[in-house]
Amino acid sequence: MQIKRNIKYESELDKEFIKEVASMYGGEEVYNCIQCGTCSGTCPISLYMDYTPRRIMAMIRSGFKDEVLKSFTIWLCSSCYSCTVQCPMNIKITDIMYALKRMAIEENICPRKFPIPVLAREFTKMVRNYGRINEGRLTTKLFFKSNPFKIFNYSNLGMKLFKLGRIKLMPETIKNPKEIKTLLKGLEGKK
Image 1 (tube, rainbow, N blue to C red):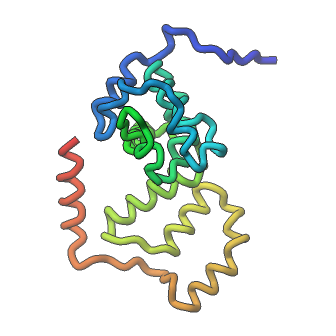
Image 2: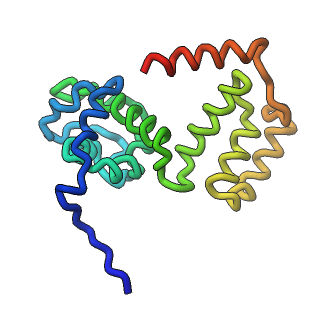
């Protein structure tokens, strides 16, 4: 029987993690968190998160990089900005959640088969390649990469939407998809 250790020693923490977060857009104020918990109290979906937003802020400051980037909390953030509006220290917590999502995608350490990062990745690929998304392809890829058996639960809905012309089989493109690629390259260069 293998024994799993649940504690982490200080030497195992990533002390540079807070600097990484602070250097990203929206993360500049991460040092100012006073751990009042207002963000967690106002968050409408904190009940469903594995760590509350207040705890995520504390974990960032302490260097728990793996735990933060693998958590469901950053993906469940609904971007309602309630935490940001109520924060007495004017910390842009929602922007920090976005920064953490980007970091998790770049380092490929998202929770496995969790649908939200899969959706974000496939959405971005489709926009990058075609300039717009195709809902039918996007949902099909989402099901196959997260939970393939769930597609059977939604097959009737998919057929109804297809018959109504709301889902198309072939992807639509914009007139010049190269312009999107150039635009995205320009944005990526401004990190």
